[in-house]
Figure 1 (cartoon, protein in one colour):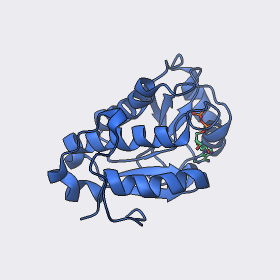
Figure 2 (cartoon, rainbow, N blue to C red; figure 1 turned 180 degrees about the vertical axis):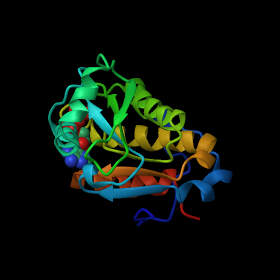
Figure 3 (tube, rainbow, N blue to C red; figure 1 turned 90 degrees about the vertical axis):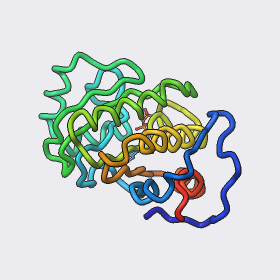
Length: 198
Ligand code: ADP
């Protein structure tokens, strides 16, 4: 379970996103969500998500860490994919990672909500298409790509919430992998709102 510090819920979670939450689903959804604080490359899940760049040939940040841990065969497979447009996602093997697969998605540079939403949605769609049941997300676009942390966290939590409302039976676990203290603080409060523990 994620760490929860606040028990009272705001009446409306995020006006900007026009958030409509189906409260009848709360109990089922909260127990599928986790926070993990640390390096995404150690997670033994069906898929970890890579915040890649459009070349898919590796870069800095989480992308660099994933390629380093997976080994050169990951880059060899990525070379066959022909890149990836912003907001879309492509799957590869996990190679030397404990994760079975890597889902590479390309986040927007700057605060472009629609593209960031697409990253989460397309990664989750690819998870289902490949019959995978567990996935871990880094905080896409909030590093080198400069999306502000708090709005990005709302997009992540809202998009995952809507996906789980429709698909919770096909999913065992969705992990938000938090690497920085600022994201730990943001997500702790936010997930209590989007995934209330009853
Ligand atoms: P982007 O280019 O999409 O902004 P970054 O890799 O620069 O991608 O940053 C995305 C997030 O991933 C940031 O919160 C960053 O701190 C985090 N991050 C960096 N390395 C790792 C890692 N090994 N595991 C998990 N998250 C990481």
